[in-house]
Amino acid sequence: MRRADRLFQILQILRRTRQPTTARALAEELEVSPRTVYRDIADLMASRTPIRGEPGIGYVLGRDFDMPPLMLTPDELEAAALGAQWVAGQGDASLATAARDLLAKIAAVTPERLLPFVLEPSVAVAPPLARRADGLDFAPTRAAIRRGHKMRIRYRDEAGRDSERLVWPVMIGYVEAQRMLAAWCELRQDFRHFRADRIVAAEFLDMRYPARPTELRARWRAHRQAHPAGNRSATISSRPGGSNRSEPS
Image 1 (spheres, rainbow, N blue to C red):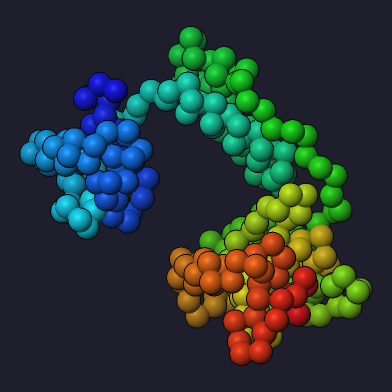
Image 2 (image 1 turned 90 degrees about the vertical axis):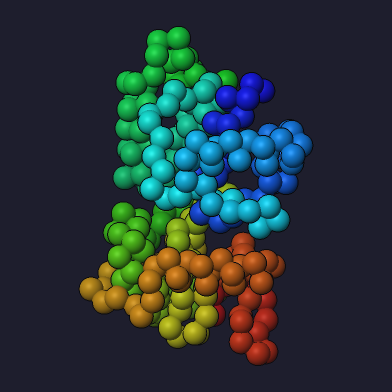
């Protein structure tokens, strides 16, 4: 890899995350030695690139740093095409349309010689599996997640029993042929994953929950890491005496 390309790639890696990235992690991805990374970081900082950090702790790129529009590589174009294909097949109608519009916008600014990587990529997604109709409208659900608003849902479990829940929606997840709503359940005082095809009804409330959406997502991610066995359906109860359940209880 040319040095100029390596310097650019360091900026790209640092731009991916707001967390400190160690020289060792950078070196592993770039397939160079940590000493080379330290030298490159020093050169970037000497040229007034807003990188903060130090050896042994890691480096972060200043949030005010802005890079001009750059040409996408063939791999990046095919990655975008593959992701858009998947969303067009698995997402709700609004997201599917957005995925097709995204590809059209990318194609509109892609040079002629690179267009095949967008329009005729070498990667493809299998047709989506058949699934039961969802009882949840995903467009307003995404809006509720972004605004931090509560929802009231009626959920039907595997045995056909209905329950009404007041929930704080966290995330819409895609698991094989199912779509899930991850949420904090006020009834159970715990995180739960609700299968969208078992949500019988949903009401979107003009009522904020007492936390920031980013804070709630961070708590949910921490809970998933602490209870990996329950991530595919309902999470394990975080309270004393909790047990594994295949349905939100």
